Image (cartoon, rainbow, N blue to C red):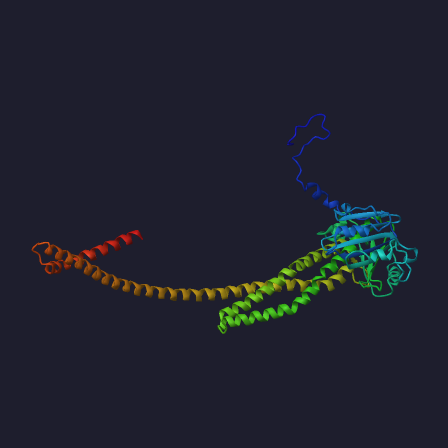
Length: 468
């Protein structure tokens, strides 16, 4: 129930508890990056840059240079997504954790339609080349994506035109939109009995995965006639994201290659240290110093590269997801985009994953070796402590014997002084006229004095023992 009591004149009846502060933001996250509506034929100039050290304010300043966007404020960029509709074209800005994407969507130049041969796509660019070159950040992906419509019936003639458009080189091509996956878990005959239809796909996607002299890759999408703007937008988004995530995933490969020599050396050092630990050929202190240095280098490598390994796996998962979303079907004579990418991307991703596991395993082995060395040091320390305790025990026994000897001498000395005092007392009494022999009296009292002194000493020892 609501905390407030609804009234008849309330504009909205509160039928729910108060919202969590993040409810609206989390609910609207699904709409945070809506797909573009692309009117065919279209040209999409796409640039993804690493945004490390680049603030939203700097990116906003760059967007301010677009026509009519001088008043654009950084607050508009807080949601990490912005689409600007300008005269004849649109610019989409998206900021991610490691990179920022800029997409310029404009009409395809007339000279770049199907049938052209390596058409110039930058000659009629809606934004200035200087604006592209001054995008803050470092380029990680740049794609010129041309999208147009044509009948898909004559595959042979269409492939000839597409290859000519891409410059006559070997291409990778896929028929997109095969809905075999839409009836997953059902056989074809079973699906046909239920009335499912199997269109051949709604579009072709072709590329060479090669950098052109202008620094861009080129992709060509040939959509069937009647393709909607929303479908064209989804096709473009998936292809561009696929290429971006592929390149971001591959950023882990140079890291792995750089780590290789260090890991090999660390593993060799660990084998040597383990052998020295087993054979006891080196002092524990020297082993400990070497092992600490090795552990520090391994932990440093782990701290520096754990994020990159995790990011690589995350990007690779996104690549696989985007490939599945394309629902590809092979075009005779060519490899599909997914097949081409997996054959070249999978070994790199396996290498990154194996290196991450290798680094983690090395860290665990160093920790186990450290435990072994620590156990040996603890045992040696325990032996030393036992030896020291034995020495202390012997010292205490000697001290006790010495103390007993001193006590005996003390009893004798105290008795001597008491007897001397009694002797002087007897002499004083004799001098006073009493008939007494001081020497005889003192001699007779010697045993009594000794016993009294000894008894007093025992009582003192008893009181000290009770007090302890």
